[in-house]
Length: 415
Image 1: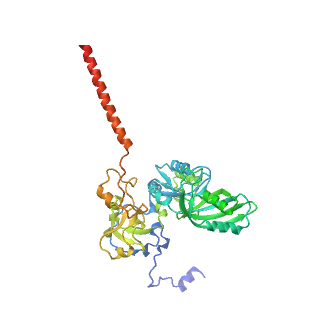
Image 2: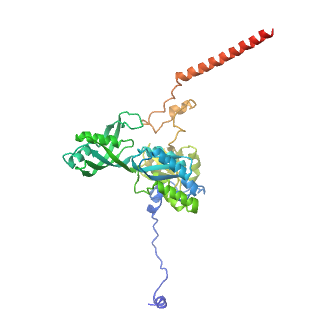
Image 3: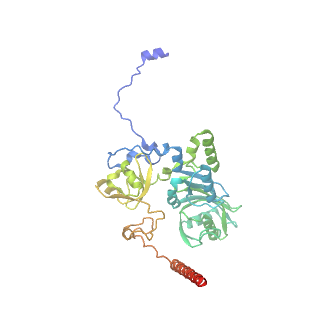
């Protein structure tokens, strides 16, 4: 049928329809995902043009607030790799989510400039590893190894290996789950996967498995497949990718590769429960103020008191991590009060001689294992420092007396 005939016979008018289009926020990026499912406190606020969506930041700002899911190569240490990234991207600061031994490969989250303040929260997150275990002799069956792995699940006593850089104290670490992937009894090799607490030594776990099986064993090879909620499948990049992306931008001004290599810091916070803040309250929160009810726009269900939450703007930018002071139910019904405190004290989070007494008695440090107890008073200055002061005073008095003696001798000579 020709176009002319189709136009004559067909009806191409837009017909009236009562159906309203559905907004699908499940495809929205980062912290704005499923934004419409958050509980609404109020819809009234004054939009402020400052800031932008994390994915639309200017490139320099995008990098300063960025993180890299790096596939660490074997041989260089984590510190060396992070220093190389800092040099390649020409930034001031870089930090990582937890040290990997030089021979270990896998996920290493590198935080850049302003994102380095998230390093502490990422270091404490759980980790997942795939490990190759070498046994020193043959064992009866694969089933025996699977049983040994199951036995070494839960809270375990561990002492850091001899080659470790930390103090070799006995500590308790938790293995949440483990699974035997492959076993070759002829070559005495086994491959297993383990999800564990931060700070777990897989090398020590392999030694314990060998002892439990009665044949001895050691770790042959190790790869970290997940750090926190960021895994191998989440845009992992190599050192070559970073180098190539920076070269491409320097020579062709093409930002696309660099924007794929570096991710916004908000990508690390998608598992936290969200609280949306009015634009007019953001400035005060950035200076350390608590979030009060009048500054609240939307909030997630299931928030409990003392739970760690993320405060975000209407554009999807993360403002700060906070400690909830209200449950979801109280936020919905209360007209005034503190919604959340900002999870930051000062540069080091410790009290000093200049800290006010009323702050020490009232402030609760939620980073501690027993947050109910108020912050302890600062430790008194050691006796050594007092001794130094006394010596300094003595030496100054001695020098004064010596100068007086010299003056008297000069006067006597003149006479």
